Image 1 (cartoon, rainbow, N blue to C red):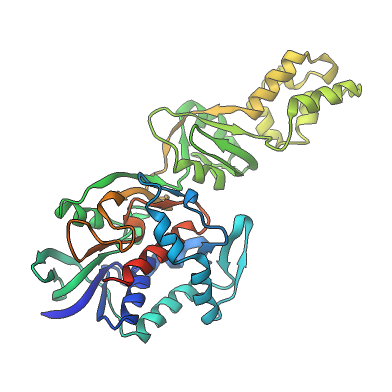
Image 2 (tube, rainbow, N blue to C red):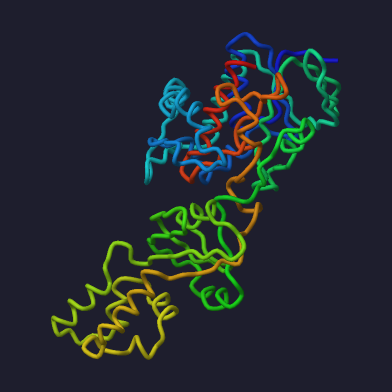
Length: 393
């Protein structure tokens, strides 16, 4: 039997961060993971460059059944705190659009930093460890694993969500919650490409590879970024963002293909100038030719501007500013970057991340019902929630 102060299940971003903070307090910490390598999702994130946080972090950048829950953690361990850690390890980074911060060299820099910080405070990271059973004892927890029995005073669940199962994602964290009667908000894939209905897929799959700066919206949210057409449907940053707010079951998404332009006003102005170009020629100046041909009938596109009535111009503008499409679904957890839903925030302390009904049991990171936007927000939630728990475990 191995005895320790703190067991953390999951050697990802939140698990390692929590281990560091607990270790700094002199706690004996063991991090267990069933994988053969720590931080696999860190290494693959951001195209291998790890979008580790964002310059602008606000509670509004997160989805949860309890939108206030994330405020405490995000205010107590901020993006600036994490950047101070990055600076201490002299990791070079750069900013991309919308305040997103990436490593200059490799995501390995982040993982190496976390593992070094763990080593410096005596944290034991034990890989290839499968947990066979887990029980609460009067003075802590007892785990049976394929590498022997371990007991601890505190137990931290940092198992992540269901996204990207090939990286080892599993519902284990939710099962632990359910074992102790802790409610779990139903989960779904987030930050994920949308698939199209069969007839739409047939119409739009030839556009695969085309990317257009659009405004994508539904009743709850709007995002202005690129939309990428794929063989299966729609992707790109704007679509990934809206997917986290898209509820399956027939909800439509509205796409403005020319968000920076009032097309009706523009076409009427050109008609006033006596331009005799065809509609197709003019629209090809704003949008990819294949896309224009896909969305508007050829008999309309071949009309010259003087032949277009005000009503026709308005109809054309409506079609391109309010292209309404009803997705067939999403590509699911296979390609999702995050899991929406998770352990119910109402069951946890926002100050400590501890279960309100099971003393000594903590949940942090993606396993909790807090989901960030694309752009470093989910990493910041991992750092912030882990830091908070690390002060108390």
